[in-house]
Image: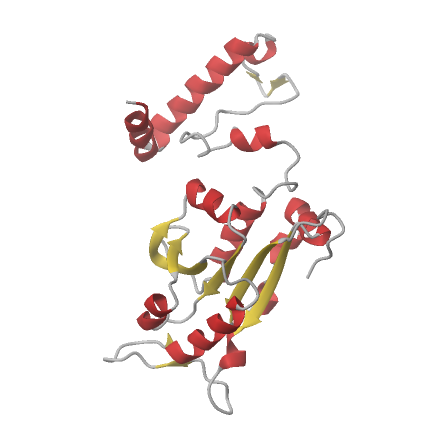
Length: 243
């Protein structure tokens, strides 16, 4: 989907998305830094329509749940064929199923996937997918949060944006990545810029002092305060890690 003009001979990081709605991609990933990197061949995106592997004249992809119940379930034979076809080009790519019951997406998982040669994402629909596909094709289930979406496409876009911005050459300054929320296990410290005074509120004096050690200390203290107040789960893990 993108040329290799800016890739300097490296194979692009390859994302393949299995979906019933390929028209949703690249969506917001075509904008800003991720879009520029896509055009430059830093990463590549392929969408595969699950319905192309559907059964019969009507290309059926789902059926009623075994044992009864509401909704429909994506068929094992359809998904198995789709995953097999998608894996030919990049067989070493991790296979991810975006699922609300999966492990919660973290920055550590994002870094892990950014270091892989790419990723194969399965965006489910309806009541989910046949359980046999998960074991039979070695799918890793990942959730972007404790809520339910209509399908996995939005979750796939979230995961891809988080990964792509970590790829070499996408974000100009690596130091800006290192200081962001979750990279150190803490939320990010507050940020300020001009004007110095706005609606009666001022930039903290320490940030204008030019004293880099004092600024670093203030930022660390503020990051710890925000994490302790807003994310006690992260704070507990941070304290445990430091002990």
